[in-house]
Length: 307
Length: 279
Image (cartoon, rainbow over all chains, first blue to last red; front, side):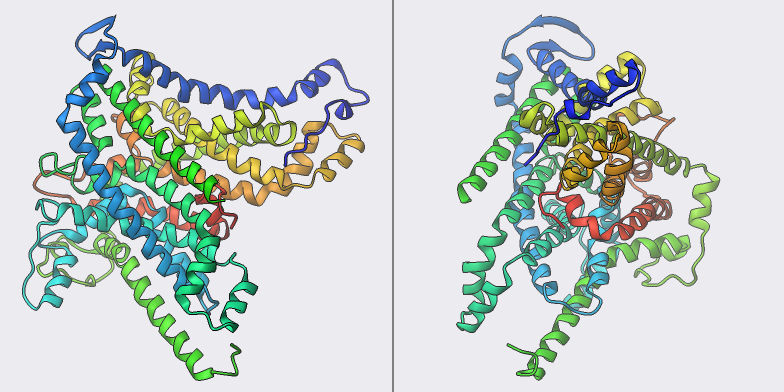
């Protein structure tokens, strides 16, 4: 795919020495600043974290002696950590398929040409691009028990006053988070699937239609196999985002009530910035990285197998 | 099935699709509508039970308050941080992408390492970065935040621009070299005009990512360079929320995104899928 130009052919016929050096070293000169910044801000903190995770450093005591795997062993005894992982899993496992399904249905609705399609798509995509903090704030206003419209709309359909403390009541915090999450990200799935669906081979679809194949048969035999790679990529992107979900929950419930909706990112934040457990936070961070790496590898492997 | 065969059925399906499209749009846009409406309401209207669907009149006092109290500084901070970091990331990232695409510098491994940087969860690095920033006195300053957003947008820019640059026909560059242009001139006069649309789209997304970030801004700002998402969370209280400010600030913080995205609509798919789906 990448064909490279030999540098010799690019040598200028004339020009002074500095220009020539700039020219000959160019591939490395222009790559250097970006790589330097990535190493500095991307890799350096990771290495720092890795070292600290084998020590016992907190904000108050700066004991630099190595304690081996103590912090990692502690991970297994930390009930709140596993609860946080559980909360993260619940949100991911429910929200991801919902987003995929709703996104797919939306894409089906708009796959054929219709007047004003561009406008509809542009409007529907808005939730995806706004800040997750704004999305969370918006739904907090929507869900408000006295002044929010959600209760009002539900009351209208129920025929009696419905008063739900969405962001406080233990039975409703997860639905609240998932509604907000699905509202914001279904349009993302929609956009990717719409692009994928419009790339499906039209002649195959027409042939199947002539043969009188049913909608679901066409879907299973032709459409799904051809959009499977896009579905996989979309699920991977969203899955990784869901595992590190932070902003929406911060804006909606702040992890409450109690620590009922505390996800792994929120828990890491609490350990780092209110408990000041430097070393332990680093250990959690590597647990998260390991988790995401495993997910990514498994998905990518399956994608390759599917090909 | 041709249109002439079953015109009535076709028309009915189309009508149903329009109904579906309109209902769907209403549902998805209602929260956005609600946000805008609250931002125009008076306090009496905001705290009215049952909620009012339309404000009595459009008035801007909620916005005026943001300006009077100086809260809009957060928007200005966001503009500076997201703007400068996008420009820097675009320049450095595009150059790096050119090297990767045309000279194959570092091979596939370097390209994969760069994209893997994008997968690092912010929560895993934010704490060490915070400690390092404290050490160097970079907390609550523009430089630190700009550096961070630049670093976190670089993998995205490099990955996207590498794709756009590979799409530029190699012959164009070769003939320009034969004509006596040096490599810098080739980049500026041949490649840049070709990738300009992709570059614009990438810049917009870079800006949006930096603009929307909350976690880094939450940790690394105190009072001086508070960005708008952090400012927004300050309006939530235990018992009372400053609804008027929440709504007005959200609208102010969302308008630039609306404008940017409507302009860049045709690049949306490629932009948000890291180019995995070419839109």
